[in-house]
Length: 324
Image (cartoon, rainbow, N blue to C red; front, side):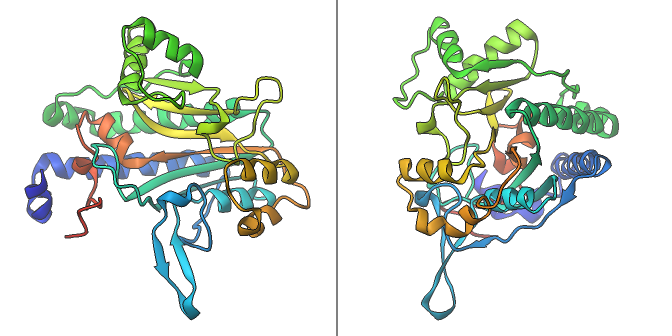
């Protein structure tokens, strides 16, 4: 695969590889159409930032003017939320994101295309999940309609749009199901590991006949500081979406009360003064809101039954690859 990546301009001449990017085009167009028909606004947020949006450990530093340091955006999270306070209501963005994560797995990249959406006036994360499952069902149906026969010929796969709603399983219950299947999750933070994700997906496929499952109710320790927490359970109002056994999305209701945000940032070891511009968004009132971020390459990889996102990324970027 590395040799093929070295000569990607030749590799992409194969009919099968060409089809990947026609499928990508149809998938993105269908998602944009879904949103635009429902009066969403498309935004283009900056990719140079003054501070972290997710984790300080995964930032690429960039020298900036007058001895300043900028950072490549890990996600458009802060700016998606700013749009809610600005009164945009419903927004989306399909754009690059960057993670300084030295992972050498089949599903990680240092630069990837992130599909993001954020909506106002929600009652909870369920409103976000309902939008996302409808979006995916619509987009996958568009791929099936336009490319189904060719995908069957070249990938030996039948593309079938998923039914909605997708199954939903709380994380604690998912861990019990995985344990009952004979697998002990080695992680100590309470999250699922890749094999745990595969096991719960196998259970969902056997029980519901469904390729997707929302895993919900995550502990704050394994979630971002801006995820809203349930006052009764202490768990976050968030979810991960798994597709054929691989996580493709994190979504949540966001915390919009500035005093709570400050305390949750401190809990995560973040300095509120470094987040002043972000916290200012919420000082004069903010609507209840939430959204998700989804990796385009992971969706394509799983839709087409591939083993690596390198197969479905035009030009892959990882810890040891910056060319071509």
